[in-house]
Length: 118
Image (tube, rainbow, N blue to C red; front, side, top):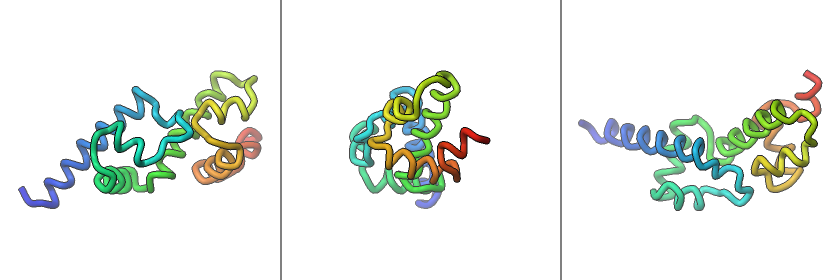
């Protein structure tokens, strides 16, 4: 087995482990989650985790993390249509209103208000 194939297998397995942790433990709900914290949770090194997320998800860590948070918020919105965006974004791991709006637009391609009108 060549080195490139071996690296690909390692990254695939690591990414599967990351997906399980993200699904079961939901660390993305912590507004302070960053690559360093996720490295400690997963038990790997920073370079390998960053490269793995970039290669496997086809996006950088921050965009990948934002997609988890936005998806959580959208699911919460479907389950709790009477809740305010402030309640929803703070419960979905966004540190502030500004970061919520910026990341929502990045992931969804529109503002939260535009999304609701659709």
